[in-house]
Image (cartoon, rainbow, N blue to C red; front, side, top):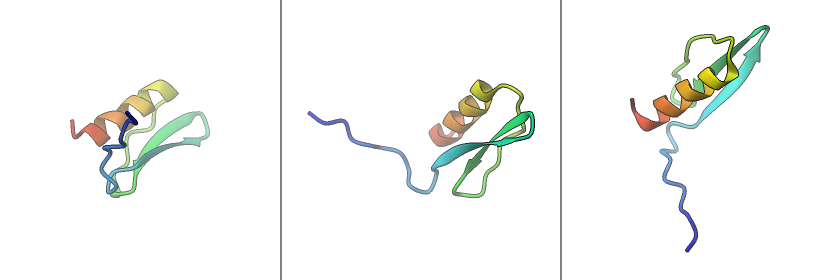
Length: 52
């Protein structure tokens, strides 16, 4: 059986580089803090999508 994408289309996140920092952003307008660790920016994005 195929896995369905259950993400909320109002909360699609991306990460972008800004100099030495990485920032998570969402289509709803949310913006995470600037992080030096890309992995932490991705964690911020995942937690936002999950509603934490």
